[in-house]
Image (cartoon, rainbow, N blue to C red):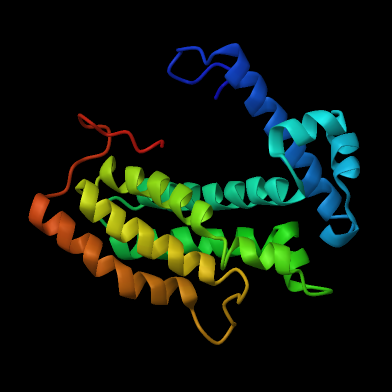
Length: 222
């Protein structure tokens, strides 16, 4: 968006939707700031509300609970994964191997620097955070898969609904599995993921042909 509530296309987002998005952004940004200062176990919802400049009741109304707030933060992390892959596809037209490698490299660096992920990996065991990306990862997986599938459909990959869902689901599931167990220096995880997943994308492009970005139906900015 160029300004709050106004997409780049020029069409306006309804006020209530824009206001809610601004609220969520402010709260999650405030939570991120707090996580750079202290561990998640030492942060209360009151702390987050105060940092975001909203009331505790407003926080409860929007996120429901501490678990709801951490899940919303995790969903934003999943969005970063999609954004990294989308940008890498845009920058590496026709080169699936490079696109996946670059996209995953960017995501792994971002995840390693994220304070919630660092909080998960350091200090006391946090079963509530761990469940978000393991036993309770369904919403995270579904959200990121749907967004990433859209990217594979509406980019030069030109995947069908089914093809896009397969590659997006596999990529997201593998990427999320690295969050509680980060890649070790001895292994080039982005290159390994690329070697594993890029042949599927290459097969799609070979069968259907490369569609230049910006052509009819290209909506890579999911």
